[in-house]
Image (cartoon, rainbow, N blue to C red; front, side):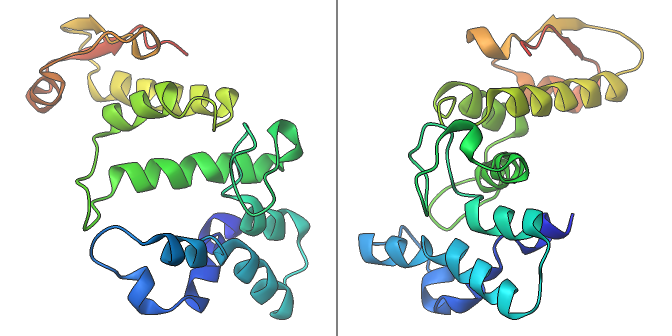
Length: 178
């Protein structure tokens, strides 16, 4: 929990005009944003945090399992376990949050995007866990077992009226590919 709360602390060392910018960042601005994991790691070590798991999450939460992340371009299991978990949470939060340059995605849209277009960047085991948690939440949300539908996130089946069905509280979701 502490690592999750501190993972972006390095952003406190980046100019607020960049952090709070309306619109897309320039290449230079994004390069400054990409320094926040190392800034956070340095700040926390200076503050006396010695727990390696926390420090490694702060440093490596933007690494991708395909090696395309930063700051060190780590690949696969060389990325610390908790950093891989927080990375998925951070990506999910970014996708489901409104930004000045984009609307928020729904939970369903975010998971679908993560399992398709981002599938090489994130740990497959953990995205399956997130999918399963959402599936379990939906099962708990619709306990009467009515209107069972197969969503099939992994194989590209789409529900056009997913939000309307969710709002009706008359739907139970099964068959999510986990």
